[in-house]
Image 1 (cartoon, rainbow, N blue to C red):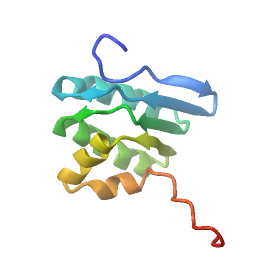
Image 2: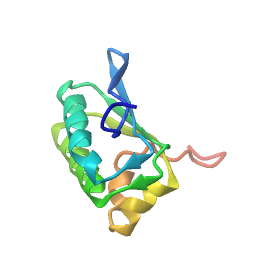
Image 3: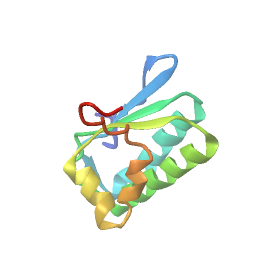
Length: 116
């Protein structure tokens, strides 16, 4: 965990993709540093993968930061995916009427057997 407790630093898994794992608590104090880290990832121009499976608490400010980031990534054509998310993460978006925002960054659900 870094000093401000927002998320793990952007880690280069390969030169073609960056991964970011969010910390358990994304409170109001985390919003600014989270925004800085996301901008850093977006500025690299490579696909970014976010893992939110550890999130247990999330402020409205962090939902706003992530929503703006997801929209900006889509506008600029940057590839972005959500590799995992906790119920707390999903519920934070749902409570604000923003669950649809997550649909744009989730991998497609696998089809039932026998369907393409």
